[in-house]
Length: 149
Image (spheres, one colour):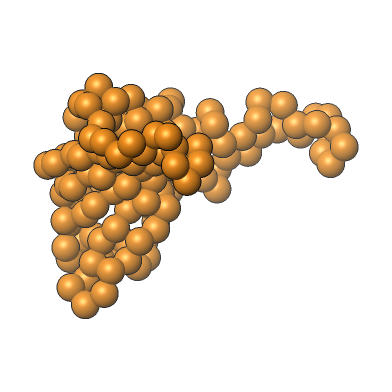
């Protein structure tokens, strides 16, 4: 059975996932990349570095995000978000970074490092996972579909 997700189901997916695909375009060709995100009920927050994605987003802030839960080819849920990219600065960037890290960074590195490959005194180092640019996506439209057999 194919169907549409309810707003509650959509919010559950947006809140429970941490990786999505972000689609943007420079007007000539589409560009799709996986990104880590956090959803606060109103905005989707992310971080990035200078590069192709950010150059495109600065030129054309209209984006599409796609999140899904796939159990099998006939048992899945998918959410599409249409929105607008907004680069964050100063206090807004700091607040967004704190929120993103509270939701996502804890998933990135284990709180323990096993001794097989590391010294037991080794510390967890997530410094390379901190990107310089914080952004949010202002949500304009959200749709969701599912299939269940």
